[in-house]
Length: 255
Image (cartoon, one colour):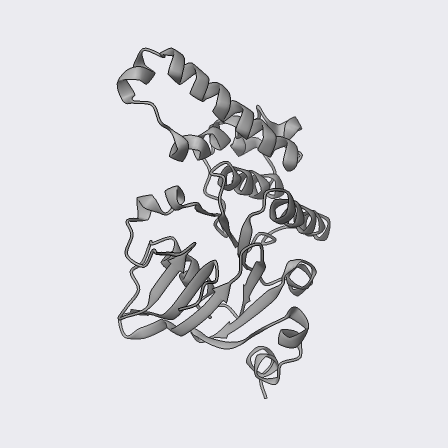
C-alpha cells in the first residue's frame, strides 16, 4: 500500500446508471499542489464530493489520508481530520461580516461546552482570544484587513472567493481542496490567486488539491496534474507532460 499523504484507489460513483467517476486512482504527496483538469462533466468536482464525504464511494474504492482510511467516515469528521474545501460558487453567510465568517471556520477546534459558553467562563474567554488571533493571522496572510468588518453581501465576487479560502484556512487544514478558485475572476485577480496559493502551500505547509480550468494557473502552481474526461483518468504527470499528452489534446480538441 502506498505511503503517499492522500491516496485514492478505484473510485467509482454512478447516478442512475450514469458513471460520474470511473475507476479513478491517484496519489498526492505531502506538500504538493495537485491539480485536476478536464472538460465540464469530467467528474472533477465529484471527486471533491467523495473526499468531503458528501457522496459514498460505490463498490470497493478506498481513500486514505495521512495514513488513515477515510472512505466511510462521517461527513462531520472530515474537517476534524484536517481536510477543508472551497466551492466553485461561494458558500458564505451573506449577511455576516468577513470576521464572523472566518470565526465560523474555527468552530471545529472548539473545546468548551454549551454550558460554559452560556456563562462565558474564563476558559471560553481564552478560547475566543485564541480563535481571534488565528483568524487575524489568516486575514494578514490573504491581505483582507480592509474587509474585516464588511458584510459579505457588499463585497465584490473576487473578494468573496478569497474570504471563502480564508475560512477554509481557519480550520488549519493539512489538505485543502480548492474548487475552481479562479472561476469568475478577472486576469488580475487570477494572478493574485497564484501568489496566495504559493503562500498557503509554503507558509502554512498545506497540501493542495485543486480543480481548475485556467491552464496558466495550473502550470504556475502545480507539481502534478491529473487530466480527466467522461469520469475517467486520461493521464497524470507534470504540467508540461499533460499539456503535450496526445490523449489529453484529443479530449480537449477532438481528433
